[in-house]
Length: 424
Ligand code: AMO
Image (tube, rainbow, N blue to C red; front, side, top):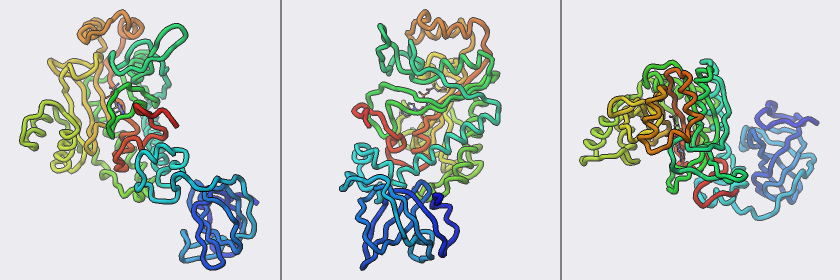
């Protein structure tokens, strides 16, 4: 008999079906056993006249007849006629799979990741993440962007010389890529003009915060023939609008499960754009003391300001000072054509117009204390004609974290890497 997915059960009465999945919960009432069966699509109540003696999380196939039931999820239950044990689970799960995961500590969630990921609420984070990835790529393809995959092993830093993980590469040292920055620029100059990449990025940063990972997924965009970073902010707002629209449409159940909501349709078009200096003034006024850096407290304050003044919990901060941005950023006097997007109190993306003039780039590389000779391959991109261009990158986990209101970014990473954790 063919397998029926739980979400595809249409009939309520007397139809014989077969379902397969995991033993989610068992409850005994009088002589009857109620067993909740979980598959990728949902949960079905199954009713057993004889106790099957199964451990939670065992994998089974059951056959039986559907009966309407007011108390069962979906208003239907399966009266089991026979079953097959496909894989027995050991008793005594180290973490409960069938309970509210918000009651578990982040350590328990991560130490027993192979089991905590079975929890439907936790798994739903990654279903929603999958939708972010799909809609991001879909939207960019519709605008004639080409998807690229660049190497994650690099000879010199893509964001400057710090925060690099060293790797033994035969008889020499190389590094894990901090971003695909230099390669995405190279592909614009190679004539693709518009590229995007979804890939892992590595940061050997020692801090342990709810917003940092040592390995994250970067959603990168780069495009040629732009004149200012304003065009990039326009594109970024449209991308987010599309992602939010798709997530709202496809993952309404997940948003409800996490008690979260997305900004109104079109809200991304109303995001205020303020300069770095204006941002510092606004934060200083609101906090009643002069601030000199945009720290996490300031970022939260700024999003609050945007919510009150523009009705959207997001703000673009542009015109960062030169020393605060990487060597490839296009200068604009003492400032740069660069920007960050803060959303719900957190920087979720960063971008800029890039320097496309060879000599200016060499000068800026030196200004940052880096050696142009070590970047000879990269400099070829500009020596032989590169159009004006720019781009930006989102952190996938940060975006997921802010959509669902997760308190720690690690919850938005399948197998997070931090200073202490490289397993599972
Ligand atoms: P930046 O270094 O600001 O810019 O990174 C871009 C975005 O990536 C995410 N991110 C992180 N997420 C989790 N943990 C981290 N340690 C981490 N570091 C960065 C953030 C951040 O906004 N090449 C430029 C982008 C560009 O200009 O195109 C870059 O990498 O969401």
